[in-house]
Image (cartoon, rainbow, N blue to C red; front, top):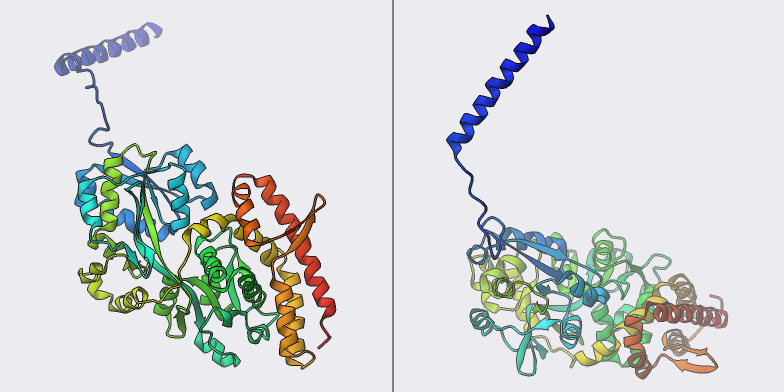
Length: 472
């Protein structure tokens, strides 16, 4: 029996071996792979983009650009997005070597230019497209040059203001705010302990950081901080601009500071939402740039050309999920643009805005100082701030203090802090903010130490003022 089994197995193996030999002879010798010097036709180029834009913009960009003739011409098969905290951009750029930086505001991009991380825009077809973009809008630069070379171009424009829920305010008997000053009015403190205003931590939102900078430059350093203190005390800090907008949308608060397109988004949802561009705001150009780390500068500039084209502007910014202002007026003359006459009306209001003279260099020189100070003094110590502010507001409306006394207490509550360190006395003046800005940015230990000092001194101030206010 064993011999029969062994014989059968050998027969099967011989048959299989013969079939294999026959097939190998039929196919013939296999050619070796052809060497390639670049990505193959199925491989393509993957562009890497560092951005502050929301993921909705990533999605729409991938859907539309990757199906464009331009993407096919340059064999661009995918877009990979990175969205780190803005303080980490230089480090992430050096490590990941992205091709394009897109969105985040002029301060961030000017810093990248100074660090040598931005390459000039040189592609002739791109420069021809850029010639259709104005050099400035309402006094804000739309094109940034260094040594005569074009380093970044605005891909969109924005204004900054706040949105309020008209119905919610009217039902509660509160006025509709129209100015930055209104947001720090004691009238909204009457809602406490419920917050009236949503605002984001300065270290987590570039758009809200810009609003704080606008207030400080419009009002002046001391008065600006007093105004921000009242705004913060009337409201509640949130983890980011999206969360702050969501608080308005859901009715958690009736008012929220925000960039314009967040306000337009809410207005599309309900006529109860009103976006306000207050006197003393600015128009911003939101940049796009080629990075010096790019491995595919030609393809990267082709992508930038698409973003800056009238068609690209319309497809991206005028989408009902985005509602941003294009930098090009002719985007509204495209088929998509003709569907958005509501935004065209807002566009014309924006470009006609009488904006303040905003000092972009000063904004960059104080960016991190303002961010870390504001978070420590008005966010981390928010409970203590609100406790004192509520007592102050209640005392005013109970006629326990005069309006003049209220203003004096309000000034003491918000004016820049003074503290002692290593036997020396310091005050958070504009000059001091400029002096420590770079150290705060590059030295986390120093930033942590300063925030700890500011928190401690802020609490001491709030408790001291609380004790001075008459009981309502």
